[in-house]
Amino acid sequence: MSDTVIYWFRHDLRLSDLPGLQAASLTGNVIPVFIHDEKLGDDWAIGGASRWWLHHSLASLAGTIEAMGGKLILRRGDTSSELNKLLTETGASHVFASRQYQPWSDELERNVHDMASEHGAQFKRYPGTLLFEPGSVATGAGTPFKVFTPFWRACLRSPQPEAPKPIPTISFPEVWPLSDALDTWNLLPTSPNWAEGWASLWRPGEAHAKNVLTEFLDDKVQNYGDGRDIPSKPFTSKLSPYLKFGEISPRQIWWAAQRCKDQEPGRASAVDKFLSEIGWREFCNHLVAQFPAMPDKAFNTKFDHFPWRGANASLSAWQRGNTGYPIVDAGMRELWQTGFMHNRVRMVVASFLTKHLLIDWRLGERWFWDTLLDADLASNACSWQWVAGSGADASPYFRIFNPVAQGEKFDKSGIYTRRWVPELKDIPDKFLHKPWEAPPLTLETAGIKLGHTYPSPIVDHKEAREAALSAYATLKALSSEAGVGQ
Image 1 (cartoon, one colour):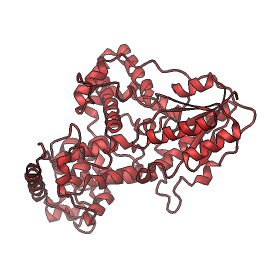
Image 2 (cartoon, rainbow, N blue to C red):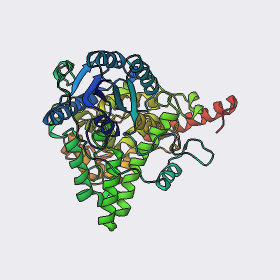
Image 3 (cartoon, rainbow, N blue to C red):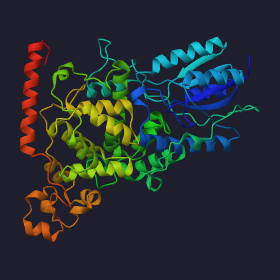
Image 4 (tube, rainbow, N blue to C red):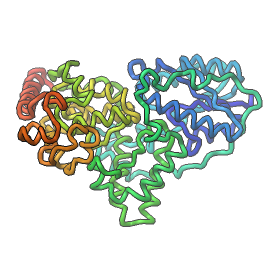
């Protein structure tokens, strides 16, 4: 039996607290492998913004492995086929990996298991992407939770996740299989380079993930409880892209947060609020593991009858941040220019799309999938369905955010809005979030010509709200006729 083993990296691009890598290091000389399978997930193949992060994350991981005396082998193609080739080339006795929970993951892992068996090799999966494995947290009846709060309470009653492990001592083989050059994958945009400037905003990689967590817990978390809703304030963690690519583990975050509470008891409430957001990520992944159609189909089947509108000019205006509602436009422009959007604003723009424009939530989900650096399949699907009203533990459909009120409440001074919508930088605060109400002289003084320098609202809030409620009433009637429970 060969003393060479393969560690197959997936969305776990780190070396510390990685149970599968720990097991691999105790079994033999490790060949670290990442396979870029562009067809994996079909329509849910990795989006454009995430490709940018993936390039830099792989470069960082490869550099760390090289400093330890090894190599990160890169292959592009069908995952099972490439692992099959690697087993033939190396004679490896094992393939180790972290288990994943996307709708296609079980079938892929079965295929890898069967393929490895044909080589006389073993395929071993380990936890590494969640705090608790799907199926391990259930109701008293043994069924999956469908409401977040009792789910998270059950998690908190469970035994604590194991403490994170350091980077293991890894031995590497003397002979290496061939590897692609990362640059040949063309993950980075070039014509045009819409990610220009992102390198000054983000630093992918495991070391930077740890720094971001430390800085957040040391300097920001005490303001998280209230500050997390103010998009102009730097009080969110911005850990989501690092979590998405597995550059930091949930266990590392959990234990660092517990230490923070022990050392600074006055921060405990804010830390718990932050951990509940980690819990939401957990909840979403457990849901999609149990209900794999969730990224594409309404969890609440009565929404199958909802009269959603398809792609139209209003969708394009929303995508480009030209709706005429400043807080919505600010969020969409922040997304396009940085690959990120503040969480409070995500809810506002999602509500606007689904309830002011009556556009199918799946079109918004797809846009976020392509443009967000932290586009996690489960969190994206569950969050969009939460806003749209069709998801598990969803916000009621009749709860319709007023974008003017949201802007005035959460960006009262206009710092965030003026940053991303500079056309409005000189308008008085009173009219910033409703420039169409400003007197003509005020607009002229601010250099604003509605419909030219800044768009007029593409929909009237009051009329849109009434249309949304009317659509929902129709939905209830149709659901009742079809015998669908309310």
